[in-house]
Length: 616
View 1 (cartoon, rainbow, N blue to C red):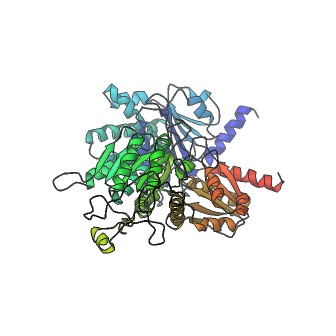
View 2 (view 1 turned 60 degrees about the vertical axis):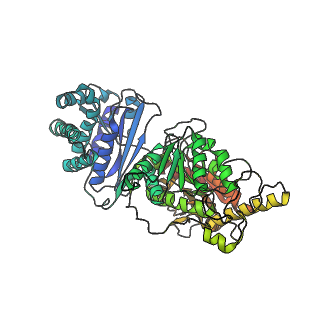
View 3 (view 1 turned 135 degrees about the vertical axis):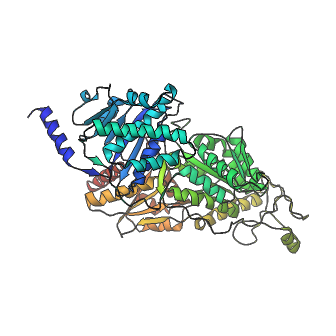
């Protein structure tokens, strides 16, 4: 049998194996082509069919013209991590088309402009040529709009080929353009044209289908940045100071939009302040100034901005001023790849500033937790009187995720230990940094408290428990020791870790943040392929809860999975653990800028276990 005959036989075999609700689509375009709306409609149409779905936008950091890929994963099993392979390619970028086609598995699908002769690129694929330009020109008289409308044509083609119901697409499109009837008409016309062209001209030969399920009922789709913004508003934020930086800008945009809707007096006067500062250093200064004055204040940034905030965060720690900093991590160092994801700012956030400085960090692992933990950060910041970090990443922050609806908060705000004028009158005196309750947290007053004993001097220089300047060695050391005790107290105040799996296995896994979804899938692969069922605990806060120490103590070896080169979570754990426990930790690292995938974890685990078995 010739090579060509072999490929043909494989292809025919692949087409007979129906693949339903379990594949990935890669839409390959160029940045600035307006494909985002079309990709969103396609993803939400699959969601509307009741099929669990996730989307990953891999876009360049320049304004326009560079390659962009949008990955949509349909998963009947509910997996939402990036899948390393994709089976369907919408090939609309001539510059990447060859590499994109070669990455497909045998039996994969290519939808492409008909004037591209792609069937010569490689055998073993199903090619569907579509005259996108001709279809678009026929339905869109305005030439300047055709580039945008063209994208909706492939939505229609895919809907027909995959058996996505057209009314579901229409419904999603109406929500997308709810207040723009003309825009809806033009775009749905493009969807219909693509659908009708595929129906009339393309013979279905591949094996991929979307069939109705009931696994998305009651769920929502939202990105993590928007969820953080919602959490801040529900937490009572009143001052927002920021400087734009990818990928955190939309945290503030979401916060600002909600504040404008919800925080106006009947006369239309704002009861909040959103200030775009001249840089990140100024932004964190404004946040701490507002926090000192009694406002709930926040900023949002990414790695380079975090570096600029170092000195002010040290002031917040030493002068004990509350504030919330949402960090959406991206690759580094320096500028790095601003539109790629990583978990490489954990150590920076933990010890930001010079001297002995430690900061509480909250680590959401889902968009629902972005909402919940951002709220919790404001309570913790005021209770602990210190800057608190919420650490997410580009994948969790900028991509759309399925979620259960967020629960309306019913718990009252925790403003911490604040003395009123009546309290001062009753007490007769006040020492700002004195530990009078044995919890290492002093009482504070707010500016404007109408009592002569309310005032104190806030300083970043050496001070004693009465807030007086000092260079006395014993007084300085006593203050630093109290701050250490206060940080130790936070172990019980940060969100507790979640035991995702516990079977009594000898092997355990630890992870945080967006790594969770890939690790959960990987553990299923490990059980299916190797008959092993490791335990898994997801970390949600720093300083680490004692339950994490206990989890490590129960296992012979523990794999720490994270998205950075230098094993930052493992390093932080080793600083925290008893010396005898650190040797149990083994690292699985992923740091190429793409969201971590399950196969990479499974393969790394298998290599580690094989090396251990062979005594290497």
